[in-house]
Length: 129
Image (tube, rainbow, N blue to C red; front, side, top):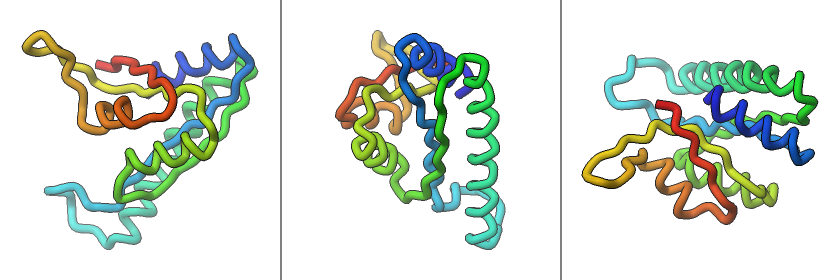
């Protein structure tokens, strides 16, 4: 996420754009995750997301880029990201994802692939692996 954010900040600085750092938190417990009261687990996930976004936002300060952060809770994180991007009339989505190569084709995660297919604006995929 850090390298993707740094790239987004550099691009935003070059063209005077604003950046929204968005983290979608899925309230559904991951399979095999520890048993925890749902509200408590969700509060912990949101706090971790806010802390991560705040750390990334600090990287933009030296570049003078305007950065907003937002944490959304959604059963379908991809749909939530697409809704926010559409509502804000995003010009570009910058996405950090682990990209694999196999059988002559790129292997993306389900969420990254869906974002690339369904986004109304261009998606810049940054390989973080």
